[in-house]
Amino acid sequence: MSALKERIKRLEQQAKHNAHFGDANVKNNLVDMVARDDLKIEIDFEAVDKKYNISGGDDTAAAAAGAAPPAAAKKKKKAITTQHTGPFLPAPEGTPKPGASLKVEPLGALDFPFHDLYKLGKVLNSGAFGTVHIGHHVMTGPKGPVAIKVVDRQRHNCDVDDDEILRETEVMRTLREFDHIVRLFDFYMDDEKFYIVQELAAGGDVFDRLEERESYSESDARDLCEILFETMGSVHEKHMVHRDLKPENLLLKNVKSDISILLCDFGFTKTVPNNGKGQLRTQCGTPSYISPEMINGVGYAYEADMWSIGCIVYMLLCGQQPFAGVDDEMLMFEVIAAGDWAFGYDDEEIELWKKVSPEAKDLIKMLLNLDSKKRFTAYEALQSTWFTDCKKFKLKKTRLEAVTVKNIKIFNKTIKKPKFAYLDKTYTGDADCLYVGPTKEELARLKKLAAIAMYRPNGTHLND
Image 1 (cartoon, rainbow, N blue to C red):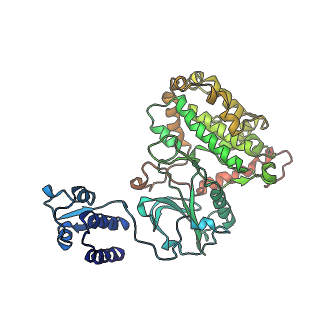
Image 2: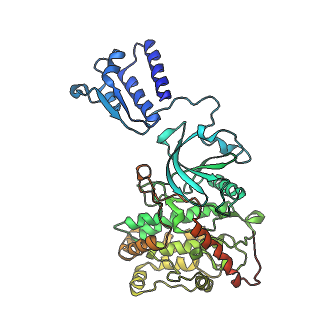
Image 3: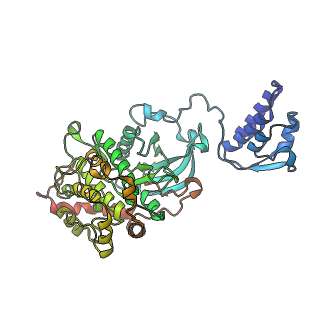
């Protein structure tokens, strides 16, 4: 409110020195001021006209300010509730601009009170690592909503230390140039908390969107996969392995596009040593999507991600996991390590896979290849015949909604992490919760990965 009063006072002073101060300027500036603090304020436009000797005025400007045109203007007041539509007041001198924290070394070294820069709004999600809010920078306001992950450094309910948070954020800074990766905007820290400001994925995750589709074809699945392969190719060019690719980590930028993928959750991401030519050793990720070499305890690199993508491509075409129906995790590890999967596990799915193009199935075979040296890279997948030879109109004829969408609904309801109960759809459309680390239950599942030591050749613990 104080900012609003100061702005009105400036308008009054400006009006005294500007004989041409017009209807549009006065009323649009008032609308901007109301939007600044997201307030609901009653504006007496008749009083504004009288105060500044405005007669008649521009109908368009009046409408833009929330008032009725003069011919129909009988109401003195008009309540305005709006998102920001114009420029804000200049920020105090010395206020860091959005992104300033990412230009200093080391990450987090820029010392400035976070709450003087960003305003926190509604809670979108909470987990073992912290809480995610919708928010905005004081220079951009509600017209530029972002997701702000607030991590409590004093937490005692998870096994994640400061170094791991800093490492994940550093990965996001490295990858922020790519279009289909959740973008890091800012990072601040104080003695008690980390503040990670990132892109708001307003479209939910890919599989939630698929559940809502009334029509879905092999062509639609290919469009999604093309962007996914391109994105992973970019990540691997940076000599990084994601190590936790799964449907929950594929978000959508907005509610308008079904293929505007945003890859998220880089908590397990690691740089491959020896300038990208070495190997990683740590066994991590989500059991249904980890690769055989990770289970067997041998070295791996980018091919582990490609196995996970093979599982996702399989799911995009039939709605089921390739290793579905195995409830016991130890048995699942055995099945994965043996490469024991098939195109369909019941009559309905088998019939569906008969309709899917041979080119798509050939690609999946190359991604779920037990021999990691023969497994396709991201760019080899893009050169496969599914992308180069199959005509779009032909793939559109392969209808998947009857079985695939039905299976995805079951997957979303019974297997995938449930949505956060307090999601505010006013701000994010149909957005799914933003991931802020595993819940206590998920942590317990991740820790059970230690049990796969029995499948390691020498039974020793391996680390990167």
